[in-house]
Image (cartoon, rainbow, N blue to C red; front, top):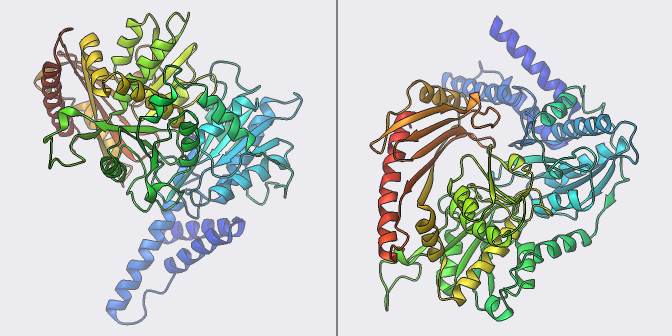
Length: 604
């Protein structure tokens, strides 16, 4: 009786939502699910009845998941699977979110003139254009000035526009590097709402909670007014202004001949960054540029990659294959909204054959996010020499190498919680990064990670090194000699049952490892209690006697537990190439043993 009553309540909730759904497609999807859930299960043969019961139960479970509650709005905004129901990304959820954001802005700027200004942009994912249009309609209806970006532009253009146009907020409809079935909703605040270094950055607590509270007050979609028009459609000048701002970052030491001599393969991973990156790089003289044909144009289905994230195994295989075929110098991989940048190069230590008959792809490897972070950190340190108050910053899960680079350059260093919403708020920031391929090389223009500007600086560095007869590995070796060899890696586990994530974290808190690759664990720090002046966050930090560090935390944007591993080995300042290579091999062996110990502790 209790089960039937619970189902009746859920079914009534589903019918109420369907009646209020502004999108005929998701309303039809829910209607079909409800019909399957309520279909007769006592007709036909026993086998047919069993099959009908199975289908009905699956439909009920699906509906129960879709109606767990309203998709949570937090510091990442919204992100989830596209579909009908409150626990999915759809027009009904977005309209409620836009209404809540509008109420928050009007409350924060009550009595202030002119009206709040919001910039709205979107990528090429399924539903993105509709979600952006609904946002513009809702905000315009309550008297907020809305500036709509041209279609299908990268997230960094939206972040740039918030500051450049002195907007009070920005909304970017994107799920970044999530799978194709997902979409999302990033919110930035600036203008008159934020007065500190975070102007134009993504929201943090308590702003997210305040907006979420306004969303919760929305009684229904039908109660939310929506304008048919009235917002301003921006032309391509905003895109031109962004590209000009990025182009100004080009290394003046790289002349036209040096830039032309660098052969680059670029993949935008089926996302919206390809054309913008192509224009920025070619304008800087990098005309020997080749896009991966199968991944060059926006495609919301991401047909050639399982996960459209340069970090994922196999994601850059097509780019590396093309680079090997063309004998390129550098591979640049952007994620679908182009706020992240990955890179690959030929590592001479990876070559197993040379001379005639050698495999063209032999030796290619992708740089780890911490390696790119260190490379761009050296560029930032050079550019910031003599700058008073300049700060380099990275997230706590990123390598400790940047702090050594900053110290060596006479710059301050700040460690933040994970996420650019924290990094971008550092006072005096001249460069910030996180190991997940996110780099902020121009905080004055884009207070967020920007894969396109990072790509330009990487290309400039590679061109300069090629002219000098050196390569990326030589810079990494120099850093190892100066600051010790810092080698990092990540272990992650994806969960379909989200309840397993807190169970894994609880297991680690109760039974942390006592050894990491044979070195005694000397500190077990629960980040939920705060650490080194940082706000509390769900995570565990382990430090071993040999300076090995492990941080374990749930992902904020994906159903994953992530483990960040770092080992540090001393290297003599005069160590030759071969000796540094041996140190890397030893560090990799130690890192592999650390990975095994952490996996065992987590029960993975």
